[in-house]
Image 1: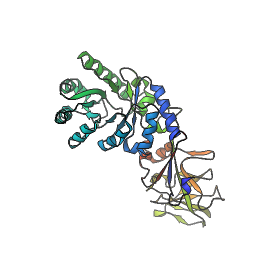
Image 2: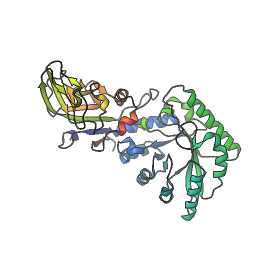
Image 3: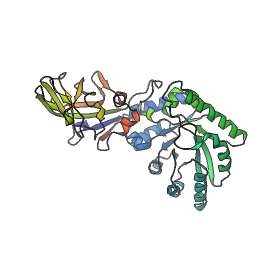
Image 4: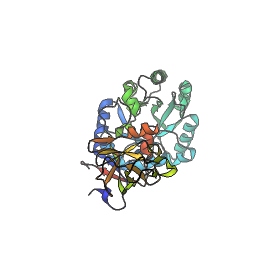
Length: 376
C-alpha cells in the first residue's frame, strides 16, 4: 500500500534503503583498503538513524560516528564501535565511559578528566585525538599537537586508537588550503611516529574529502567518514552515487482564480491572467525552504509547476497551467522524480544558497518517514 494515500500522511519522506546500500558499497570500494565510519549524526541527517545504520553496517561500515553522547548510546545496540566526533562535556564523561563509547580528546584537560573517570570505573577507555588543522572549530591547534600529545599519551587508563581532523573547504576542487592541511597532518603523523607514538586510525576525509582529495584516503590516512555522500548528495567528483530521498505531498485544493488575485502572505504574487492554482499540503514547517517562494517548482503529474507567492507554514501554492487535468488528492513531488522530471536536493540548495546538509536536516519530524528496502 502506498502510505502517501493513508489518511493523515499529507507529507511523506520516502527513503530508498536499496540506494543507500549501493552508495555505501561504492564508497567502500573507492576508498579500500581504508576503513569506513558511517557518520549518522542528527538522526542520520533526519532520515532515521537506526534504519540507515543497519544498512550501512551490512554494507561495509565498521563503526559509526555521531555528534553527541545521546546519539552514540542509541547506536550501541547494533554492535559496532561508536565514536563521538566533536567534543564531550565534563558531565557526560561518566556515562560515556560506562557505555564504552570512543571518546574525543580536544586538549590535555579533556584527557585528564577521562583518565580520572576511567580509573574510578576501573575501565580502559578508547580515545581519539582531534587536531585543528584549519577548521577553527574544535581540537588542539596543529602547531601545538606534538607537544600536547606527548603529554596526553602518558595518562593511564586510556587507549589511543586514533588521531583525526576536519576539512572546511574540501568541497572545492584543487583547494590549496585543503592540500596544505593534508601535508601538515602527514608531517604531524611522521613526527609522532619518530617520537614512538603510533595511532591505529588516522582520518580527516568526510564526504567531500573522499570524492575530491583521494590522497586523504591513502596512507597515512586509513579511515574515512562519509556522511552526506551516503545519501548521494554533494560534490560532482562522487559520480555514480544516487539520491536516496523523495519528499511527497498532495494537492488539497484546485481552483481557477481570476486575473488580479493575490497569492499568499505579503501579497508577493499577483496573477496576470486567470490561472488554475493548486494548494499543496506542505510548507516550511515540513521542510520546504521559504526561498522557493515565487522561485521554485514542484512536480504534479510529471510536469514542473511554478510556486506562486510565499511558502507558508503548512501550505504552498503552485501554478497548474501545465496540468489542467490535475485534481484534489493528486500526488505532488517536492524532491524526487515524477515521470521524466526531477527536482534534486541540490536544486533546493542552490535556490536557498545553502548546502544539502541544511536541506535534509530541515525536513520536519512531523513528516512521515517511509522506507523502501527490497533486501530488508
